[in-house]
Image 1 (cartoon, one colour):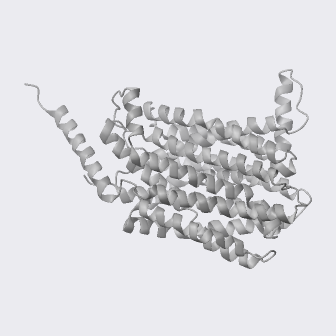
Image 2 (cartoon, rainbow, N blue to C red; image 1 turned 180 degrees about the vertical axis):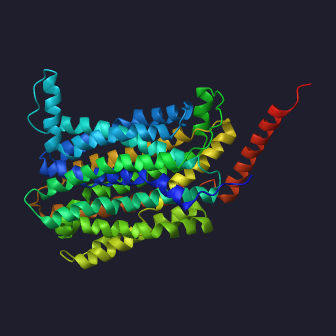
Length: 471
């Protein structure tokens, strides 16, 4: 069956919401935890607990949204409608979470009109409440956008191309949002840290509706095949016996722990260990710009060697070279830049390949069950990444507090040494686990093509059955 190859312009339009995803994802891992722990004065333990608690909400929300988006068809399709609904949620929550000095008075005005007493300061409860709404909108957008992309093609390599565009815009969105704090930092001012986070919030509020409008108007959805009834026991058994699914979600869990742990500690590492705190956002820019340039090569490698072997290579790269972070001398911005550019070439690989591989795993499930459960499968994938993030931020901030690390500074040499060891050990061990898990992944190019052959034959048989004359 001939497979449509989408135009570059349509893929660019489809990928635009990835800028919002990136603008939310990086600050949630890097800027906001440090901002609320230090500038807002909540402390490491309180902030770690707040992010962990808010992420726990996703354990319920992710599978539910995945199930609903799979089962219910609207006049606008199954996926795009959720992208549209997510936009106002993200915009509203970003105002309160990223701009608390304006968000708190606005909240007090609203609750005052209802007769309640005003909130005197930004507290852990304020942060948790804002994060719950923000994560709801973020999950809705991420899940719908990935599922939408997975259903745009049945071809093994075209799926990688679609996810490559999505991840490419996501990685490109990181430098865009990071340039804002760099500009604020160059302007200086006693409230520079506060203003940097606030500007990121305004960026999200402005970009989200524009990106959403472009995507939903320029890229359509493929017609969804009616889904037969599947008893929950059969569905659960199919999930539990899907080796590719198990391997993929566990690998994504470890990748989520690795990335979020690095993000949560990055500002502390740059300030107190590398002693280049004035260049933290510039270093992140270099790191992610390197990732943008490497995405096309990742795609070519996946075409040549297969997705899971390319993922194994990427994980081994991190295992071998993440320890080079130990080589950064204090105060040497040039060595720090060189090493981060070197490590940054690999930053987009997991997202591109995991998302594309999940579409192939969905084919296997459809062969076994007769159902296309793209939303549910991507919900599992986003859930493991978020659980990894919750584990990373909560555990890392707890450990840093236990070793005597002070977020505001004045740390002992022993505390800084331990911070440095933790910063390298977490990604080293997590990527070693990913390498082991991905070895033996059951679906490559040949296997996926065979799955598609079976599914295409079913479609032909269904059409012939409908068109057959009644005798």
